[in-house]
Structure formats: C-alpha cells, structure tokens
Image (cartoon, rainbow, N blue to C red; front, side, top):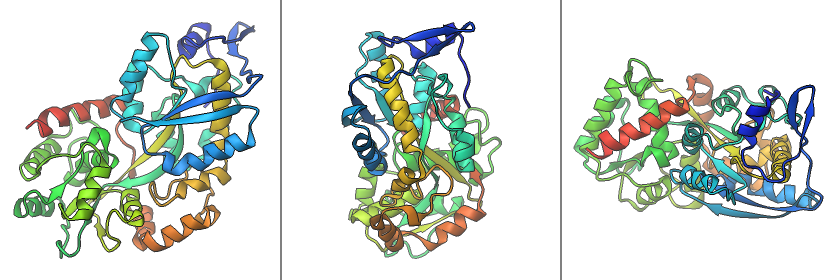
Length: 394
C-alpha cells in the first residue's frame, strides 16, 4: 500500500502545499512529514453524515494531542457540491478545507477531477498496512480510493426494503412484485436521488444483480434491464427527495409506506424516533449486498504541517479502540472498518441501541448473501448522470 514518489509525482500529489519541506535522497523526493512546532487549527467538512460516528474520535485525538491540534472546526456540505467547491479553491490557490469526510459519491467525483492528495503513497507516512488491518470488504473498498482517501467506516449497506407493516401486510418478494406494488399504490413508494443518498445509490447499484442484467459493473452498456425497470418505476413515484433524511421523515410521518433502505438507515432513524420502532425490513429474491464506506480525504494544496497532523489523526482513527465508536446508534451498522472490533468494545449506549433496534436477521443476511463492491468511480459518475437525465428527468 505504501511506496515512494518521483519528484514529478510528488509535486502533483502535494500540489500547492505551502511551506512544504522536501529532501532529496537517492534521487527520490520525499516529504519530511515534519509535525508543526505549535498546534494547528483544522477545518473538517463532513459530506457523508459521518460525524455521527466519528465525532468522539476527533474529540479523543484533540484531547490526546493538544500539542498537534488547537481546535477542530466542523462544517457540513452537500456531497454533490463539495468537489466543485474544493476545485474552485484550488484554482484560486486558497484552500481552507483541510480534511473531508466523504462517501463514494464525492470521492468518485473528486478522483475524476484529481483534487485529492494521495496520502497512502506519501513516503514515511507511518500508516499501517491497510490490507492487513481491514475487514476483507473494507480492504476492497480501500482499493477504490486509489490511495486518495482512507476508509474509516464500513458497512455491507443494502439495498433493503423498509416498510410500514400496518400499510404493507405482505412485502414484495422480488423486483416484479415491487413494481406491481408501486403500480397498485401510486406515490406510496419512494427513494432519494442516488447521487446524494446512500440507500438510493445502493438501490441503483443493486438492481442489476436483482434483475440479472448483462454486466452489473457497466451502467452504460450492461444495464438495459435496470434502466428500463427504473423508468417504469418512475411512473409511480411522486418525486425524489434530495437526501435520505428527508425521505425517512416522510416515511415516519406516514406520507409514504415503503422505501429502499440500508442496515444503518433502518436502525438509526428508529433509534432516534424519526421512524416508528415497529417498521420492518425485507430483502428481495436474488439479493446481493452492495457495500459502502466513508473516507477521510485531504484536498491537494493543504500545507505540509497540517497534512502531517492529519496523517496522525488517520492512524489514531484506525485503532480498534477508536473504531469501536463507529457502532454509534446504528447509523452505519456495523460501522468498524478494521478487524476484531466486536460490539462489546463499543460504548454501553451503543450496545443498548443495537440490542433494542438492531435486527437478529442481519447477522444471517450478512453471512449468507454475496457482498459486492460498488461501481468504480468513473462508472458511478456515469450512472448518476444517466439516472438524472433519463430517469428523474423522464
């Protein structure tokens, strides 16, 4: 996972970093990874809702290392808008975002625009051997980042169906029954725009497996059945919310009776009281999990002293004791990306929430159904664009 960089590649990676100290050794340029002489203030943007899981990790790091961090400032941003905002700052050579917490949507868009620092390839960064510490599927998710992000949270995700059992006595068992239910109950089924919704994105990428499409990894040439299905389903959907939070509110209030979901979006809204505790989940015949992850990424142009501190933060966040906070209130269930982090390591509050709002069937479903990787970044961007243009605009 680690390596050295040529001078040209290092400059491309470090970008416009100010005050960067580099040394020349045996013809290879390397970053000194020199930590600052005084603590730095760090600006973190959360575009994945991940602070629900990792806020304690940031707090613990600041407490453990006051010599490195004077304060963290946290802000949120819509995932589709974040890469463009960073790119504009880079063009102006005025980066004021030090780290982002993102999902595959923003990661993919940023890889296309080449805005992320290749942190994994920085020499002597001291990162652990990621392949050896991650869960197998989390390690594969790390591969999708191409070194320009580090997986901090992971879950098998979905797509699942979540429904109000008072309105849906018998949930659909397969994709044909789901489409028929939507026809028979117009505007009662809903899902959010995939480019800004984990469940929406998982539903989009899971359908090719459910439908037996030609190539589940090729949304341009291999998804004929998927695009036809989504266009037909579209006829019975009133609109697509911009995010999953708004969707779950509608489900909980009774405006809708059924939606697509994930393990986390099932557990957490019920734990928070947004969705009634008695709501149920189901999986469809031919179900494959499409896993998901959240990443810590550093925009190109962040100064070297801050990059050095952020690498220390990343190493800290990957420690099992810190990973255990990822169980949180089930938002990204299970949550930890690294091996050997059982629920018993989590805070008691998290254990209580999972005991009350978790699903006994999840353990069986995770163990006995295939887990697939999401689309490669360029394919994901193409799928989002096609959905926007051909499904939603239809």
